Image 1 (cartoon, rainbow, N blue to C red):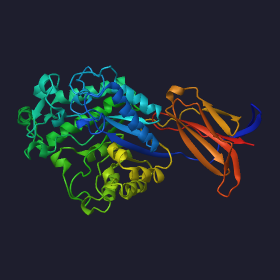
Image 2 (image 1 turned 135 degrees about the vertical axis):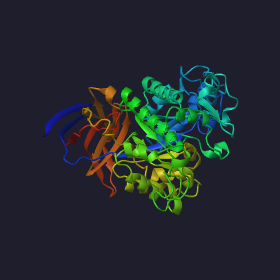
Image 3 (image 1 turned 180 degrees about the vertical axis):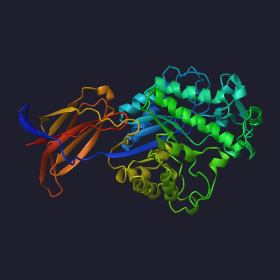
Length: 495
């Protein structure tokens, strides 16, 4: 079906026809994220006790960097040690934010509210990264009076390296961490909740000794428990992971739950793989969580090179993909430092391209960490000239919602050398991004626009490669919702 419109603007008469294209152009879909760590002030803020203005300026610099590199998500650590880099009535303000645990920013602001708004204004998702069990990190200085270590010591054990850890088997621990997640999901307009690889702690944190949970293990046995100690620990984590997923979906279905476990499930899976056994040491049955679909995206930390035989990046990624029986997003964690020596970026770029080949239905990667992007110009240039040359939207999550949003209405007017493409939508609050398509000759291009944008100026004519000129031939505008669904494509053809 085609209709013809007369649009009169200034001195130019534009005759526009529209049609529903049979084979419309497609915006790139790929998750491109970086971790931003707050523990030990690794990434943000750069040190405890910065002024509010300095904290906000640092945040903007990092988000602007990601936007300039065509990233579309940031994963911000907001609970590094049972504390909060946001306003919480459950846990104290973080030492890593203000330099004093329990002390709010002064002048007051809510950092998470600031980050969410700033990320969304740049067309990026903001995922909150929480450590579910760590109670006190060595870099957190002295244990504060409001720390769970002192307010609820029955939930906590001390490790030989000086850290404190909550006992994952305890109902009180599971209740506390679940309550924290629910509180954040309910009060903030976040796009995802993210856990990393810290479940039961690495044994090196306890001098190689077993996790000190004798009392809770004895209570389990006295209550008639029949599982082995390892299975009991894994079952405690399994129940928690499933519970968190269900609680998130009960409050806000569109908020994604992501997990970033250690990259190896068990040595020998697949055959050539050697290394740390997270199943036996961290009591994390990450394969089960993926098999069960208790996550929306899965980000195993594949921090090894392509040609590292015993921990090969593509071998491990292909194995995890074979276990992705529920077809969830598989967006591997990549170690930016492998290609960030300011000599070349080949390793990281090769891994991105391999990922596109192994998981073509839902491409994506999460980069550890944003510090590598800040430091290494060669890596930044390599990404921007290569795999991240064009913008991308986050792949849709059909199991959460597969309903396309309504189409925007679009119009144009001409002003000197530019044609301004304008759009509107009956339900703007449901739109997260816009994709503006424009065609010169036979070639389509696009721009991903932010939720508050209402117009884009494009050249009326461009100089083609052969030295001739090509006038704008057609345009289109689509809406993208919170789960990545894109509206129908309606092409406006200029005569």
